[in-house]
Length: 117
Image (cartoon, rainbow, N blue to C red; front, side):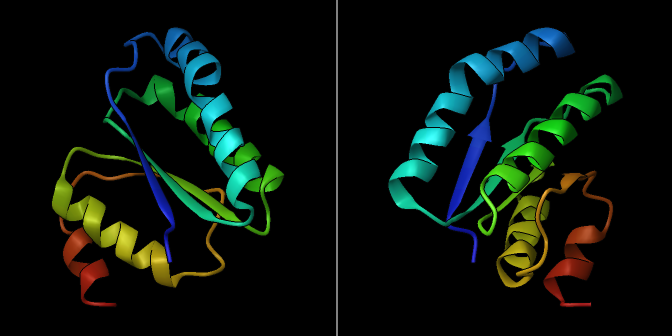
């Protein structure tokens, strides 16, 4: 089950600025939540961004997953609510999936995931 979903909107367009903002403004709250609630499963939902954002987002989710194991931390990037819902449903049942960054394009994965294929 996914315990928490953190939706991030309005990050800077520049990847370095976006990463700096996340680490300064959002990471302290994530750490405080994990400290307060203990083991949990978090999915971070980013808005779509260019390929130059992939590296910092992937590094972020992988490090958070390592730091908060056995809790699970995953991230996805999409503005397609149907695709987001399908992946959240999938992650809720996929106990071994953690540390993944999943950019979604809404071109059919939602149907496959929601049908359990």
